[in-house]
Each structure stands twice: as structure tokens, then as C-alpha cells.
Length: 411
Image 1 (tube, rainbow, N blue to C red):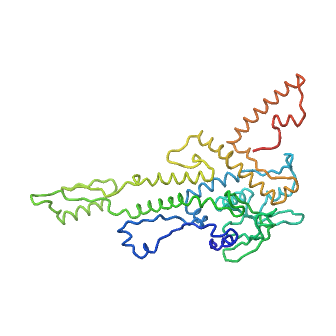
Image 2: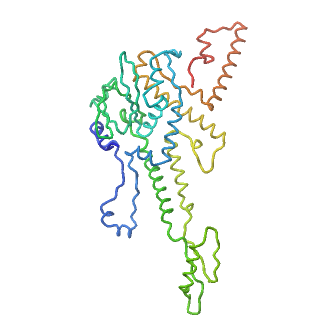
Image 3: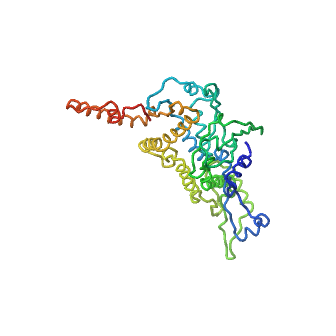
């Protein structure tokens, strides 16, 4: 993996300062040099993850990966179709050859999946897609965002196209070898953060606190499991006028040996007068699982998903899951996938031909129910128009299409 701090140095010269500066793990010199004094005075500092290492967190935090992968999986279910500006479906075009075989290793849905994951982690996604003769493209390969550098032109706002802002791209292999690409060879997609035009800030930056807490929760649970220590104290209850009488060493040794020899759930029977004091602490009282749930919800909300799509202790009803899937598709997946396809259309030059790619989701069973409702409404409108025609009320073909929405746009 490339050094992320080096990857983004070029941004500092363009935007000023460190664009991705995070608090990281700051421990002051006093704490480092005087740990004993620090413990005496009780000074504690929060430990936050380095949000520059988004891919590492994606690999090591299951809650983050679950949300990112679910979003990518849903986006990749869209079936690409080509339309002209009148909404008519175009059946023959070179783009279908690229869709059927984008690269030797991946399908089209794999490509969309990869672009979605990179976008989720970095708000940037790149793909190698060099133009051939007559601007035809027959290769589309997603590129890891954390290994790409953008060579900015140094020009600012008065640019009418991407070439005016970006001079090219540099890809860093695992061997540290660099490869340079021209603008037309790379498709560059961004999800805006509301501020930066190029290289927007990743959502992972805003999730620094819940992601840090998730890691801390797992660490705490691991410590409790691996370093449980003594589970309790078995003490003698004998006493006289002078106070407690210690247990006889031989009697103590016999109880200990008997304990070690026994299997689970067996009872210990002894004539010794002893008392048991448990030293364990119920993990539920630490509220670790409640903290984990709250942090997971923060991640789910950040990516526009819904908690009912993920496993939980309480579970979800079939109706809740179904309605949540429909809501996520309509509110998040379909709009974001359509935006990605629009960018693909523009950067591949399809828009210059009066064409555009659009993902269709009407094959999703959960959404087919909505399609059936729409179809029933349209059939009702057709019946009304037929009855109006019998009464002498007529409409043009375009007016009829607008009334009953019988165009080629689909989910």
C-alpha cells in the first residue's frame, strides 16, 4: 500500500495546508516522559484513528465494511441501458461491447461495485479507460483511489472543462513504480462534500469518532476475554474469639486440586466452611454493545442506508426489511447510481453523441411491486383516455405520453 501522506502532498500546494489533516493519536511529551505522574493525576486522552488509512479501516472494521459492501452490492445490481435524448432505447452501439466485457477479470457489475467502494472510502473513484480509434473504448479497469495522484494544473475557477483543472494522473504500484496517465485515459468520479470541486473530503473523516469507538470497543472486549484474571475468591469462614482462622494449607491444596480435576457443571463437595466471592464483571454493564450499535447507526446514516438491512439483536420484520430496501433504493441507490452513469456518459463522450447511460432496477423483486402499482395507475389512465375519446375529447400522441408516462424511462 502506498504512503497516503505522500499521495496527497500535491493537494497542499493547490488548496493550502493539509487537506486531510486529522488529530491522529496525540500524546503530549509530559505523558510520554512521566507515565507514573500521569496515572497519579488521572490525565486521560482520547485515541482517534487516522482517517487517511480508509482502506485499512475498511478491512479491519466489520461494521464499516458491511455498510460499504451493501451499498456497493445494491448499486451494482443496476442493468445499464443506452438512451437517446428523446428517451428512446438504443439497442446497437459500441458501448454494449464494453459493458459485456469491461476487462479480462471483471464484469460490469464488478466494475460498478469497485467504483462504489472507492467512492465510499475516499469520495473519489478512478478507472483506466483509454480511447481507441473514433473515440471507441473497449477497456474499463477500476483503479484504487489511495494509489492515485491528481496532477493539478494550478489554474483555478475560470476553467470550462476538466482538462483546465487537471494535467493528468499518476498511479503508484505496490513496487513503488509510478505510471503517468493523460486526462482522456482516466475516468474520474467524485461525490461532492459541498466545498471542494476536486478531490472532496472523504466521509470517513466525519466518521472518525464512531469508527474509533468501534475499534476501542473491540479492543476492550478482547482484553476482557484474554485477560480475565481470577474469577473469584474462595475464603475460609472459620473464626474464634481472636478472629478469622486461616484455612489449613493441606485443606486449601485439596480444594484447589479438586477444582482443577472437575469438568464443567460438576459440583464440588467439601467439608470445609468456605465462602465464594465472585470477581468477574458482567460485560453488559460496560454498555459495550450499546456503544457499538450507536456507532454502527452513525455509519449507516452517513451512507444513506437503513438499519433494517443489517443484522441486529432485536431483528426486523419482513415488512420492515422490504420497506427499508425500497426506501434505500429510491432515496440513495438509484439517484447515486444514476449520477455515476451520467458521469460515465459525459467522460466517455456519449453525451456528445446525444446519448446517455442509465441504470435500470425494475428486475429487483422488491421494486417490482412499485412497478405493478405504477402499471395499474397507467392502465387506469388509458381507460380514462379511451372513454374521453368516445366523448370526442382527443389528445396528440405527445400529450398522451405525458399523461400516462408511457416513455422508456425505467427504474
